[in-house]
Image 1 (cartoon, rainbow, N blue to C red):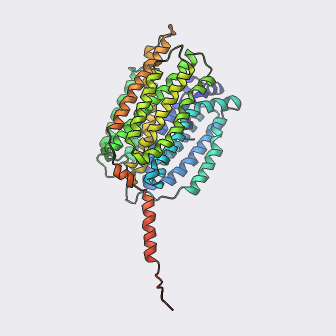
Image 2 (cartoon, helix red, strand yellow; image 1 turned 45 degrees about the horizontal axis):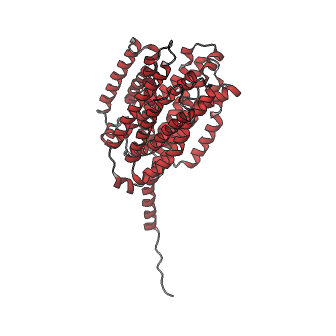
Image 3 (tube, rainbow, N blue to C red; image 1 turned 90 degrees about the vertical axis):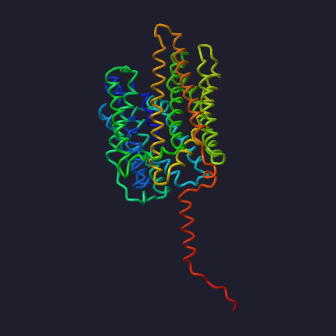
Length: 469
């Protein structure tokens, strides 16, 4: 649900523009503000979960998300809708930053890949199903139902989470929340993502874009400087001292760069190049998320037994092969070939994403699970923005509006570049290594605590001697 709302509004922007009698530049902030707020706050709320307990932050996230959704549905102006979307994004960041940590803490190591695979499947299905669902609801009902539908679903999820998620107490150590680090990271990442998001529209060498990129570099450099010098940093940079953690983070970014190149480019080819309706194009594009949804849980289960490096590497190689296949499409390419290429891309992503997430979460200590969750989700969002920016740059630089044939070349150029990114991702996934012995013997922290408590109870239980009468 939280991931779905990042993309559900994309297809109803024209409806919102007409409803509020606004212009495109103003109404597109309904989408942009959600992306920026979620991305900038993931690490903050992941760290807060480590300190105060993941369940507490997760439940509060549902309350804020449901309230923000209701306010979005009641919005009477574009400004009110953008403001409500920002509130909704704050709740979404709380959910996305803490859900992998909750799963990691409550499942043993030999089931972590399977659990995170199911969670990744739901996240990705939310991201890909959003545009189609938004268009259907707005067409058959009203644009307001796009937001109102979150209210009953969110309340049900809140009740289930309250009942079934075990209470955790947060960090046992006395650590303070790093407010300065949180502000610096939020400002730096928002500047970076805004620059990447608006680069194609404002011009990559325009003064606003160059200013945003320069500000992002400066703010994030100061953030790293601060984090290295305080006792309780928001982002414990020592996590990146683990080769597994660093490589899993980098390969996650590269995976989403490649993946969102497809999501950005294929609609142009299908609708503009082949003359399909949005509904027909959406039907063809579902081949990718369906294959991914089928592969991710299976791959996660296998990675619990075989380790994560081999399936993660294989998944990225399959994705690269699918990108190369799709980069050859033209006006005569059969629909079956396109659907097959998309399905193979989904298969590769599904094989990659669960083992990679499991490796990243498993390499972080228990008191840093929240920040690891935040890094995982941030890597996804940064990869999405980079993928769209890269694909858009290749597409616009190759396309000549007066020559329709260049549309196919523009799409092919973007997909070829994305294939190179996927190949790089496979190399990063392969070279990270992993501790198979640790993987095989690892159990969850909760499981070990339960065994200790059981042993203590047995020792304290009074012994009854069995005497003969």
